[in-house]
Length: 302
Image: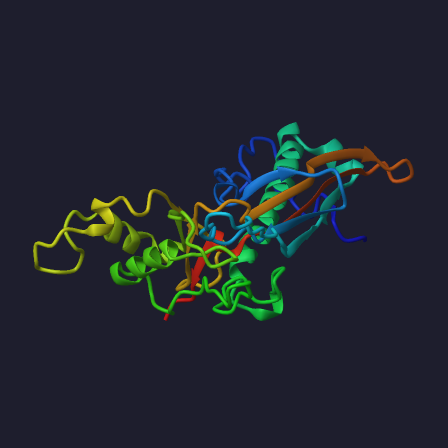
């Protein structure tokens, strides 16, 4: 029997009168985590390209009678977002459909397929961060997303934080690194922390670090500067991060973590003429990646 076909023997309890619920098919839905982190855009092409503009350097002093000096805005690296197709379906035999007691069973199977597509999108987006320390998944400038050697016209720059578990000290260091980000020309940019992205294992620790009025874990009366200054306005707990020690600081630099959608998830249904089986499938096409690496700083943890 072909893979994906659902028969009466697969879920015999579905044929029993009085069955009200299906274990495993009624998990509570949650808002998409990736949409809290990635900038979502639509696309009508097979790929999208985001190109860095290097900008200009500092304006020099113009002495009396001297001509104006002209600079050129050069093209930096480019990030290519090639759309990938993700699809899945299932087949239900005519007999199974005919003998089922409730139409809700079929509806729930469709909902379960939708969940699989949602989970797929979550994993694909989270992998941008999960693979961010691995040079095998280089971004447009030829190095890992989180690297101390991003090439620029002013020399190598870094968005790789010194490996350390999440703590008051390491988060303060991340804030300083965010404030010290520079343009391709080496000039300071106006950047601050937009959100902290953590695994569930760091959720309680992050709450203590950010919400304590006084410094967490000490007996002195020093104020908690992170809290008093409102350094981290938002926290996202991402269940799809694979390294429980890794954590990330997203900045307010634009064109960073980007989600390009060519086709939204859909559900198609039809019937096979010969077998009378019912078929349902879902299809989506999108690309997830990063444009400007200054939009996120990564710490692999200790």
